[in-house]
Length: 104
Image 1 (cartoon, rainbow, N blue to C red):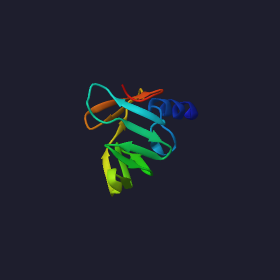
Image 2: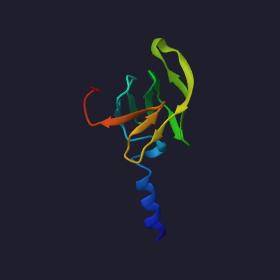
Image 3: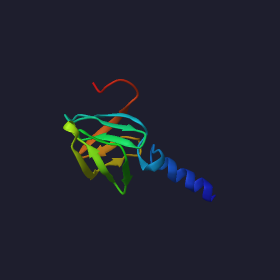
């Protein structure tokens, strides 16, 4: 019974891969004119930053080092949640995973 409950809890949490990050892919904004979010391995591209070693916990995405255009390095801490259907929620916008190609 405990294993069944654990399995149900994992399914309810949505599509998450090791490290707590969402499934790899490009997440396109739905009805908002904001940049897409990309997830690749342990890295996340968010808010025009490339964060190669990001961590997601408690609704916060954190990275000790992210790279901006021009090569600037900055730490980053922002809101990011995974909805039960796998969508990402960030800064008041919803992002849906696209199976292939860039965002429309």
